[in-house]
Length: 115
Image 1 (spheres, rainbow, N blue to C red):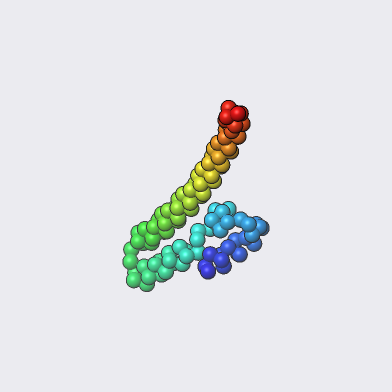
Image 2: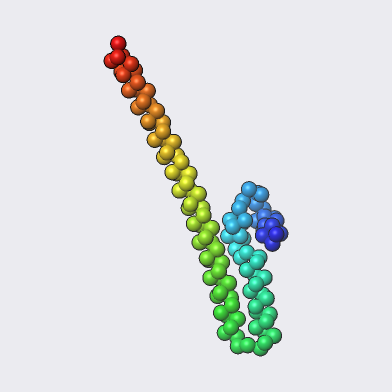
């Protein structure tokens, strides 16, 4: 739900089409996922109210950046998996076609040998 809200706003900001993925539009606009921003702001609010040292704020910001990178790596891996799956399917299709052609080439000679 949060990504849907953020996505609409980012598409308008970037003047993008609705076919652009959420991850891509976040990269184009340089905006982290809204859920991460909310979590970060929540923690920063509690750090400030508890009057904890300033270095804890820095840790929280770095933690959010790290989590964003991990999400991106996960998205990249899923894209790599999709790409690899497509390549594998293409390769299998080529092999099936070659086997089919080879069977057709062998079949007439086998029929002729039996006469």
